[in-house]
Length: 74
Image 1 (spheres, rainbow, N blue to C red):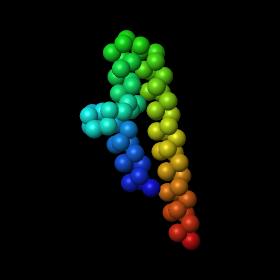
Image 2: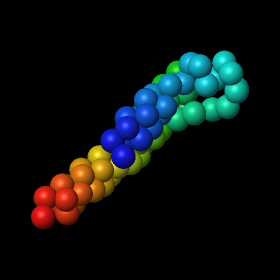
Image 3: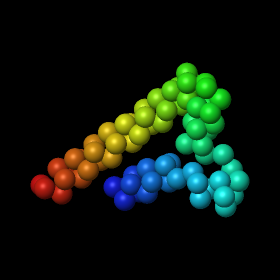
Image 4: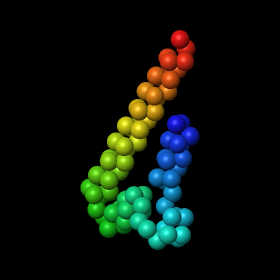
């Protein structure tokens, strides 16, 4: 589960290779586009949504690990 979280976080940060290979738009590229257009509020909103998702995933993974340790400790 931790490996999945790290891979997911790494994938969310990658935008250069994704754009060159597939040509699709990813969230970090969308934020950069908003910043280039001087839409700071839009870029901030997207970044806050990403931050919320990241913190939620971190909380869920830590809760799952804590539950797993308690279950196997008995």
